[in-house]
Image 1: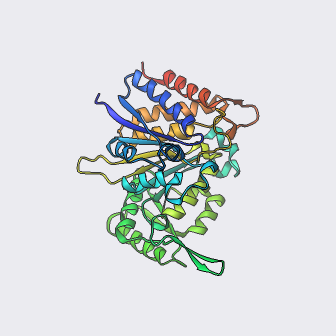
Image 2: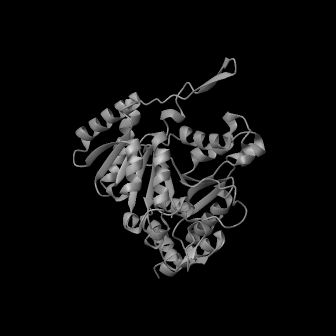
Image 3: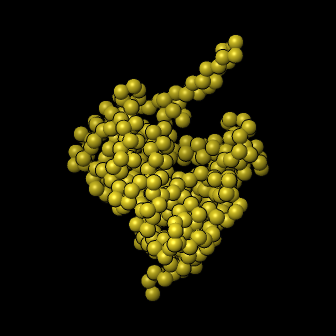
Length: 370
């Protein structure tokens, strides 16, 4: 088996704690001969700023570009609230996305049967939920120029963020969503704000055109993003694949995450375009943040980070069988009643971050082929 290189960027807060469980699982998989991963590790976010004054170093960026996949923990925290804007912890993640051209962010929202009662919605609304939000990641208001705060004098200031999209940017994320829908229930809902935003008008036009020319077999619907947010908490199982821009994707995926019971449960993948060999740059990260309020206590939920590893196995290394093994192990652990604090329920057993990781490895070993 050829050795493949993974770069780990644990980051800040609970990032290093949940990434430690990724190391545990990879160690077991390597030991069993299921994978042959060579792991490197570097700094990102506030940890990188503390070390060398930037949210990610050029050397770490070079390692990310050379890796077969990047696993990312979380960045940020109140410690760095007052650092300059261009070197804030989040700038490291934005640079990774931009320099690696990770234009397609895949955020699944899956409700485990064992956690249906942990959702803020009624069980019948979320049991069996399986949504995939496809978020455009390298354009829109997060990267548009000008982006500035101008002093107007007399105590007044003006802040400007620019929402910018071009046809090709919209077309490639639409194609990604349609391709993914063909592997699922063959339905896409495109969300934007064409009633008040010109970028939404173009988004609607381009998505419709891509559908008409190349994906007529896929069912396409359109919805205003604010209405989409309402429908996600009213009747979430009506959706299969949702495709939307950078800003709305950020917000709607967090809404969808809470339908499942906890942000600590959900992974994501950020993918670039495939090259001539079919390989692509890719970064995998949990949807949750750095959670500085619980950092260092050993109580963080590692499941989103481990599920991100499963996505990495599936999308970057074509290791679907091993990904299935990991995901099945997570399901069995939850079925046994083990819970970290964020998903704790009456009658269940509260465990630490490390205990949860150990339990997942034990279930993988129990379910491994002889």
